[in-house]
Structure formats: structure tokens, C-alpha cells
Image (cartoon, rainbow, N blue to C red; front, side):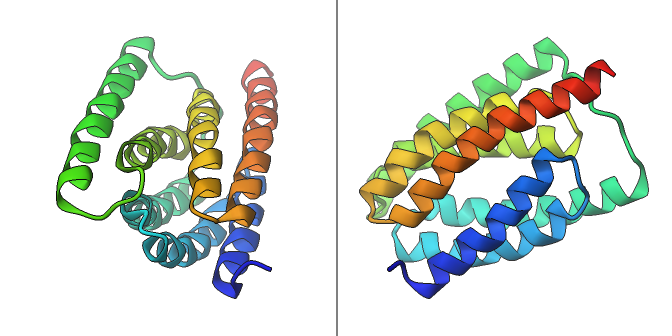
Length: 181
């Protein structure tokens, strides 16, 4: 049985992720609660980049909540050039932050952890703007996260991220249909 904190983080975050795929504003307050809980879980598992990522998620979720409540923006596409720059920036952050974690902390899998951090930032920024491409980045993040979390004994979290991977496919399809409409 997973620890109660990990269980609570997974349950709350599962609700939030499902709401995001449905393009529902309640994804943001539930996401904030889940991020606070996961911040504690990841810190305890020595996944410091993922713990720091939760702080970013709380801040951007507050902004996303405000933005989505203020206006109902349609699903749209991101500019290809902007996506390329975001991807290159995320790759550079992965290498740089991974190197810092490797040399100055006892972080477990610092480069994989940093990849989850950097590409999640891109995915979250795209989600906040209701950009269709967010789901491709979430697929990448979840692909790296599943084995990373499993290797730290966060079995429930790894399983849930496998379901998030499926949800990212479904969310991408659902948002693509909204974009085409």
C-alpha cells in the first residue's frame, strides 16, 4: 500500500488531469492542491527537480485559473518557430540543470528528473494558453516519468503517470476536435 501522502497526491491530481483533458476550468484549483502534495512526495524521494516543478505548477496554475475564468479562449495552435525554441530551451535546461543536480546534490537520476522539469514547463505554458501542442509535450513528459518514478519505488505514481500518458492521447484528440470545430 502506498503512503497516504502519495495516495492523496495521486487522487487529487488524477481529477485535475482528467479535467484538463476535458478543457474544464476546475483543472486549476484541483491541480494546485495536487501539486502541493506531490511537492512533498517528490522531495521525500530525492527528486528535487520534480519537487521544484511543483512550485512552478502552483504559480502557473493560479495564473491559468485566473486566465481561463477571465476569458474562454478557444483551443488554438502554437507557432512552429516558437515550439522549436521552446523545445531547444527545454533541452538546454535539461542538460544544464541536470549537471547542477548531478554535481551538487544527492539527486536520483538528475538528467531524467531535469527533463521532466523542463519539458513540463513547456507543456504547462502551452496548456495555460490552450494550445493543442501541449498534449505532445505531456506525452513526452509522461514517457520519461513512468520509469523514473517506478525506479524510486513510487509505484502508484508511476502507474498513474502511465494513465496520464493515455489521457494525453485522449486530451490531444479531444482538443483537436474542438480546434477543428
